[in-house]
Length: 436
Image (cartoon, rainbow, N blue to C red; front, side):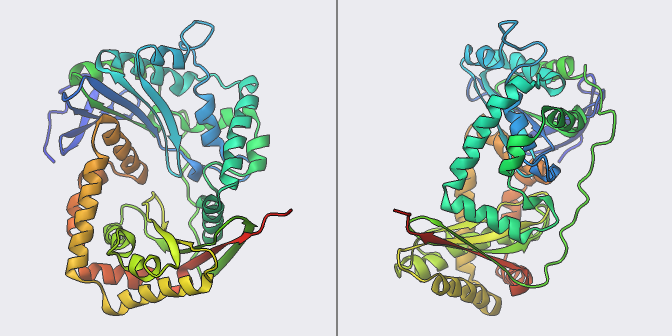
């Protein structure tokens, strides 16, 4: 990182730079802004990441962030059907790609636009930050859409098992609730409750703007200042999430019995906060265990015909997460047999570690995956979005350096530290024959 002139752009304080990405804060309201010029194609991605997700919800209004995501496309003060300036129409008419996503720690709204239309995207996002229409007449049909999403998830054996594993592993912390929320909350949360949620979290001092692509930095920052500076900071402090998950005092198990064709085994262990140094060793470990035909669990499970596929869930979050190994069983295979193989392999690493060759191969796999995942302005903005969500956007720029520093000794250490029986949550999906 290198120092910059704090007065380089009017209205901003410079914060830091890493890998060509510069961070500024809009003095007027503490909105954080990340910019990276890339003139390789005449497009730009504009993204607003709000520091709010299902982590900020509780019983009675789970799924609120996701439902608001839908409602915030229904119009705002300056962009609505009555003015013939509806958000979708304004952006699709210029060939933009637009969408939004919600997860545990964040919500993001974004546009990928031809460079000359960047200002329009900025104006739209600034307007709906504080002036979104949240009407009961819109909530009712959007609730139905969201409920349909919920029901599609309920028809997926993996989604159902994953949701139950998280709800079992986390009892106090709001990671207990899936992002889409519980069905009764989706159906019954009031529009007033959603407005209250919106008025609590959707403020410039609880958001980070990211601009990647073909634009002039001075002009883009001036436009962001022009449109976003009309908003003040939140009138009240953004409420912190202060609920910690109590220490787990023994293994937990969950079984889900539903109509399906094959069984699934999921074995989860609590992991540290995403910014913890152990995160990188866990990322390398997941590749050693299950990435490619030469990985350990593929040889032990897939090659022997015990399962059709293995999936590792190792995403870092703002708070403690889960490292989950999922095995999708071959019909007729006993859940116990595959569970025992996975646990035995964890114990094997605890005792004997991993080889230097395995670590180097895993690091090369991660390097290739990261290279492909950062191709294009949206891909960069999307990856930055996840780093912002876990608490520091430089997680993105420093990721490969930290992965390269993961050693055999460190990987053995983290398996011994986190993969203990008392910190485990095991889930089985047991496929039942459909009723005739």
